[in-house]
Image (cartoon, rainbow, N blue to C red; front, side):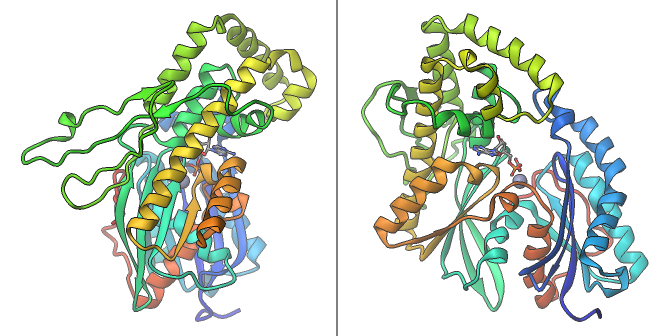
Length: 406
Ligand code: KG4
Ligand code: ZN
């Protein structure tokens, strides 16, 4: 294989996965290697930044070597090295960036900086068999992000405009926090997804209050009234159109509090503690155990009231993500929708979004499950249009933990 055939090595280390991939021309994945640190962080119930950096340092060289071997390419065959610039954990990003810079310099190949969120979006065109129609609405929904972008392609280069974001927790964070307060495993999203299928989504009614982001002259973020969450209330579509520029924002911290109040108000705390203790023991014996296995072994830990609460929470969160996404798609005349990030793996979100999109005559696309969560193939894919346009990074590239897109 020769250089000039569009081979890009992608490197991703923004959070708790060390990943490397080789992708040809943004669409053909030759290798995709992910070293997950989930088992390490599960012990602490969340990502510990110092441990993440240490693990990235330990994993980066073997992960890149494994990707190159799997792709059966030599370093000389590569056309460019792409790396995640941000957003993410500073120390974690630094490991990938330092390694990528040194490699690019040593090989005399161009270096391409990729925004992690743009990477998530490109997981879809990377796998899709047809061209996506623009303008495209992208919902990026993960443990750290809940954003809506309007994407357009001009002369081969993708441009983004942020038209919505969470004002507090990300959707995945809400899944993880609620799972934690119900005594489930980490990360919580997959547990909630599996258990929700066994409960009644109409049992508890969670309503999302209106989110108003007033852009009055001189108003600061702090002066924005906090969003309200109530268990039963009038349905309201949340939106911000106060300054003429319409925003479709999200808020997920209130529903977590509403779940907590429900647990406290319905005498469920003892059951939560019993579940937490039993699962901790089961997970210690079998790390990586899934919700279905745990239920098969100890079904008494998952009572109907808890399953109903989980199903109702997921139903409300998915409903809120859908409402904002379709309202934004309509307001901006989007020709199609892509949904990516860890929460895009959620089965109810996939099913209901696809049904509603079909009803509206819109095309909605998701990455495969493996490409929904963090990986480096999406980074190499997002780098391809930049490679073609000659958008290269220089030696001054630094980790940018708060990097914005659009
Ligand atoms: O994209 P990702 O791997 O990492 C970030 O950039 O955050 O997303 C991880 C998040 C976690 O919050 C996890 O609980 C959530 O995605 N997640 C899910 C599902 N699978 C992963 N949330 C809901 N349902 C799922 N099936
Ligand atoms: Zn991510």
